[in-house]
Length: 501
Image (cartoon, rainbow, N blue to C red; front, side, top):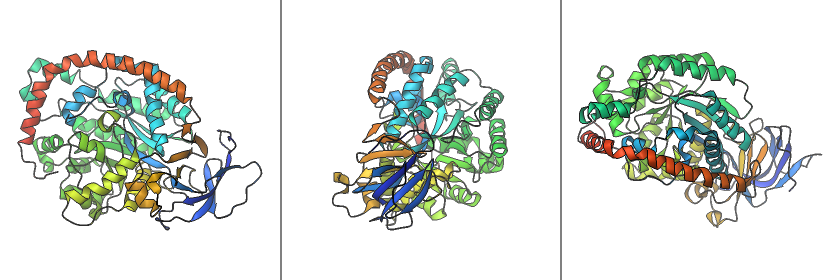
């Protein structure tokens, strides 16, 4: 195979592969060719003759699938992979919070490239980075976005903002922790106006970043944002027609916080969001593990979407989402991998498998999401959350050329009985051979072609050692806070919130 130019205008022909069609034969997809002109798919049909100047990618014995969409991810803690376990979310936040040194440009660039590299190698062509950065800074932002541009992945970017600390939104913590410690853990007050102004300024400054860059909004969670901040974000969403991602009812503690602090809204964060005017097609509720049935029905009524993160929900002891109730309500679902320090991998095959399987043990009904539904959630569902449903998530003429080519000779597909089921239940990312984003080959023969992998590995080793040292020093303060967090956590679990997950 000839090495194509990586710029726009490349002409590619993916020839002779089994092309996965959501509406076709999902078990034994038809053999077809995919013609790519520039950034888009020009044709999908059998036996297309190569055109002059067209690079041919031989895909016989391969499976061609739409690029996967990682609809929830935070790039700031990629270097903390494998460092934590046995920690509920409210305690994990104490350990995964990064020291100030983590804003060094080289470290920021390296961790951004590493997360994107792992996504691409696992067939993810689009990620939604709900980027945690404090304080907000243009130079930092430019480093992150340049890394994404250099590696060639599609990114839906939002700055995660909040003006209420995690400590202040954790039930009982202010009662169990001495005031001076609580003030230290909470940190200084945050100015919501300055944060919202920063976000809008960046939207204007970087309005024409390129065809692989898309804006979104990221209020951290309704319990972590003042009403004024949420109303301002709602206005931004309307003004610029941008999607919004926010953590909602991820943990039992958050459900209890809703019962205690939002009694005016029947103890419901979802009803609170509806009252503010946020709940609707522009809002994506991330996690949504501890939703009641009336809240699920309200999300469905208003046209909101839900982003499941099954692996991190399990590792952080958050619980199992009410998948079947959400499914019966007709809510559109996407999938995400969440923080690397929470789920330890950016692998959508894991998320698809867990999404399809967890309902089997959490609900007495025999039905559960099928493999085809899981694939839709990981492609079209994720695309819809970013307002890109007509652009990505399927291999169709006119859509963006975001796709992955998998080797059907891998043991995961032998014998080849069902593309859909083996993608979801057998594949782990090992067979991903070629990845194309926006019409550009970014992974070929399982290696990046946009970034020198060996050089990146060297940088990861260097900044990783420094990161572990810095985080270890920073974490020395944690034993002072931990007994009070543990006590608040135990007290939270003693309370009845009306549902079990």
